[in-house]
Every structure is written in structure tokens, then in C-alpha cells.
Image 1 (cartoon, rainbow, N blue to C red):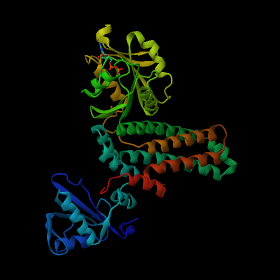
Image 2: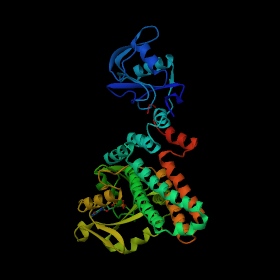
Image 3: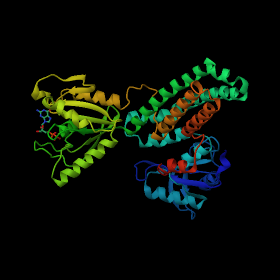
Length: 449
Ligand code: GDP
């Protein structure tokens, strides 16, 4: 596709209106050079900052600022792009935007600039999604990871896997073309070796993508435990301020309190749920109900207990969904004696700490950071659940292909599974996409991006 794909020209305010300082109106499409010329009074020099007086149709001054023109295809969208930098007042920017529309642009839909960049081959889909993730990043680690994906680190890994997959497909398809020798062909250890290498690389990429999702979304930690175990106190210790009310009357925490805390650049979402006990109090029962639904969506359940109750309280973890990582906190060590500890007991990562004094809380932060995906080094990239889902399907097809080759000796079947794996992989970078998917992805962007 090329810049001629879109016949119309779009315009939007590309900075938050009302933000102090500079405000930008961004315009993209075939009319951009004419709009630039109308505002400047002469043809603009490409990629040159012109200081201009932006005037209305009647010649009245709207604002003074910089005008920058990026001719197609060397622009963000791949089309002619014009940027008008004025003063950051929403009134001025609105007037300037209206002026651009008078001169031939229309208001852009959310994400339309990035959508055009995608359609013009400037970015693939995973990179375009990373633009939105970068804007929405709630932590430094999430922003760093989104930047990596925007730069194409994730996409390159997907492409490398795609190449490996295509290479294997070529071998398998070739074998099918020679039916007399198909069995020999397929039994060739080189094919099994290629498939195994592909599956290994796929497993690594899936793991890294899952970590990329956690980095972007933050880790959802649900704090559970009996009333008075010290859940609210632990939330406060992690959050570093008095977010929850701490009292010693059982059943105070009647609702789900949410708190997002930044721990070394990782967003940890804490949900302090009501004690999971049976109760006749209607309000408290509602809290318990919410506690259960909270747990269903959490990544980590942090069971808060005390030394004497630890063994009994483990039962509270029994009903959690299998995917939830369980961590046990034995609280109140300041009262019960032992030093801060960090060990595996009954197969569960268990920390001894004091929410009151803060002893051992740093070790818990370390555990949460590890679970949040930090520690992946400089190359850690962001990913979305959509990507993980596609990779999981790729894994399923690769498994089936392996079965078809090794057990069934069925080349056609293996070839079909590999074809489907390639299709699923292509969904990540946008090789295969539906309009619905594109609508959902770009519709969630903000206007002007
Ligand atoms: P929740 O009902 O599980 O949220 O428990 P709270 O955080 O409200 O704490 C219940 C009681 O235990 C309060 O009186 C807290 O001061 C006390 N408490 C919480 N953490 C500690 C701790 O580490 N050491 C001691 N000695 N008391 C604690």
C-alpha cells in the first residue's frame, strides 16, 4: 500500500489540550501541503521549522508558532504530514484545528494516525499496539518494554520464528509432493530436528511474551487471609502510606480496596479483600463475594497469616484457580519471634515478615518484582494478551504437527497444522487480520495518535 490509500486528510490535536506550554495540531493526508501553504503563505520547506502566523479565513491572527511539513512517504503515517505547534491552550488549539478543517481536513478518529502508519507499512500491528502501550504505560519498566516493542524487538522475534516455520513447511510440503518417498522424507531426522528447534524457540518466545503482558498490565496481587491477619497493614506497608484503615476489630475491611503501587518501576495492583469468612452481615457478605471474584482475575494471591495459623489458613488457597501464583506471608514476626525469612514450605514460597515494623517487607517486594516479570534485562519487550493467545495457538498446532509426523506419519496432516501455525503467528504482526480486529485495536487509542 502507499500514501494514496487514503483520499482524505485528517487532523487532530496531538497533545493533551490544556497542557501548559506547546500544543500540537497534527494533519495527515494529501491536503496537508496545501493546508501548510495556505497557513504559511508560501510552499513550506520539507522538514524545516517555519515560524508562522496562523491566521483564520478572515486574516485574523489565531496564534503564532512553528509549522513543520513531512512529505510522504518519510513521515509517521507514510502520508504528507503537517504539524502545527502553537501555544498549549485548548481554545487556541481548537480554533487551529477548525481552521485546518476549513482548509480541507476532517477530524481524525482515535488511533487513525497510527492506523494509517500501519496500513502504509510504516509499522506492523504489534509495533502499532506498542505505541498505545507506551502512551498508557504506568511504570518505567512498562514504558521501556513498550519502547522495545515499538522499535520492533518483539516483531523481529516473531519474524524469525515465522522464517523457521516457513523453512519447515517447505520440507514437509516437498515430501508430500513425492508420495512414493513421503514416508522416508518425513522420517528424516532433519525434519524432526527442525520441528524441535522451532518448538523450543516458540516456548521461549511465549514465556517472554507472557512476561511482556505482565510488564505492561502490572501484576495483579490479591491480598487474602482471615480477618485481623494484617492484610490492610501489609497493603499499607507495600504502598508506603495509610491507604487502608487499620483497626483491630475483625471484619473492618468490608470492600475491595485497590491500590496501584510502583515498586522499582513495576506497577503492582493490590486488592485488599474482605476476610474470606462466612458471615451473616449483609455488607460484609458482599465484601466476601467481591473478594472471591477478585481472586478469579488475580495473577498472584498473597495469603497473609500468622505463625500459629499458617497450616490452617493454607485451606484458604485451596479454592483458587490453578493459574494464580500463591505466596504465603507469615505476618507479625515482631510479636511472634522469628527473624524475617524466605523459604519454600509445603511447596509454597513463604515469607516471614512484619507489616508493622516493615522487617522483611523488602524481600516480599523482591518476590513481587520477580513475578511481575522484572529481571528480563534490557531486551524485555511488551506484549498483549492477544499476542499470547496467538502464540498459544501456534504451540497447539506445532504439537499436533509433531504428533502427525512422528506417530501418524501423516504428511498432509502435519502440513495443515503448520499452515495454521503460520496463520496464527501472522496475526501478531498483522499479516492476517480482520477489519474487526483493526477496529478494536485502533479504536482504543486516544485521538491524535
Ligand atoms: P486485616 O483485617 O487482615 O486487614 O488486618 P489489619 O491490617 O487490620 O490488622 C489487624 C491487627 O493486627 C491490627 O491491630 C494491626 O495493628 C495488627 N497488625 C498488623 N500487622 C502486624 C504486625 O506485623 N505485627 C503486629 N504485632 N501486629 C500487626
